[in-house]
Amino acid sequence: RSVRPHAIRFPLSSIFLLRRWRFRLAAMADSVPTLLGVPIKYLVLCFLVFQNGGAVLLMRAVRALPGQNDFVTQTAVIMQEVLKAGTCSVILLIKDGSLSATWEDKVETLKTSVPALLYLVQNNLQYVAVGYLDAPTYAVTYQTKIFWVAVCSKFLLDKTVHRYQWLALTMLMSGVCFVQLGQSSPSSAGGDDPTSSGLKALGIGLLLAAALCSSLAAVAFEKLLKGSIADMWTRNLQLAFFSLLCSILPLMLSPDLPKIWENGFFYGYTGWTWACIAMNGWGGLLIGAVIKYADAILKDMAIGASICVSAFGSVLLFGAELSPNTLSGIFLVSWAVPLYAGRGDLCLAWLSPPAVPDATKKDQ
Image (cartoon, rainbow, N blue to C red):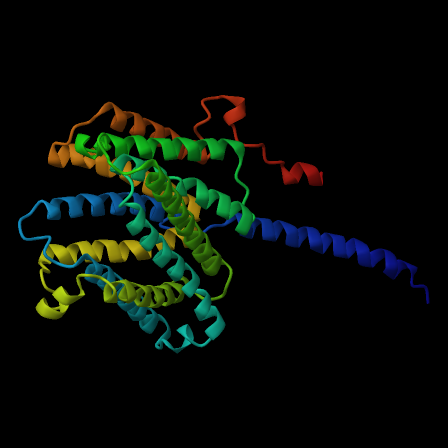
């Protein structure tokens, strides 16, 4: 018997099968989850823009009402985490009939504590830094998190960020800073601020560290959502559990604790307070969906766009002044968002995304 025909036939058939599977895998990679024919990624990004902008407008309206600021803010943060945990628990019970799978893998569960701890450090650093900085410096410095999240995504997730996308992120950060500066009152500009330059430098350093912690937490959560078999609701429940523990600790050390013991945990709560809790709590779950179906960078892009939405809403609803800074910021953000997606190059070659090679031509 001669084995030569088999030796020839085997590689030819293997090449044929490999090519078929490669085309199938390419088709699978191109397919994305959709709802009513629209990619879920775009839906959750749009929802986040209007949800976050609406939450800011709602809280601003509530603060303007008499008797709406008597509650302890930290208790509202705790209730947001309780709401998120309760929502995820109900969905998992309907879907799986049990919550036992959420806590089965102890190592995977403990991994979710990392972003929760990073958010705890971020909140405490922000709390300290705000005492050393005026409002405009604080607003501008904290927006460096837009850059930090791109840097963290590049080095921790090996994500490619092209030159035109770095420019888009720069424009987004600048636009958000312009909008926030346009909304700052003259008294918050810090003209006669007695804080020494050394303490201001310390405040900027602390705030930069807070921005880095926020970015690391978002990228770590993205890695958890996309790098394991646990679904989004399981991860959100785990994160809400650890975030709840991290929220209780600052409350126990807060000077408001005696007030809570005296008046009760829900002292000062109104229907509007619960509305803000619901808006922010479910908004946290929406952020998880954005990170799941898009990424942490696009999450910050959507939040940046939402700041412009809230600024424009403040003009319509509260008669806020539409300053040149605000207009400049809205223009920059409106350009940065399509530019990041590769659609705002204005026919300039150095702003265009790199050409994608045609795989079909290469095979021919």
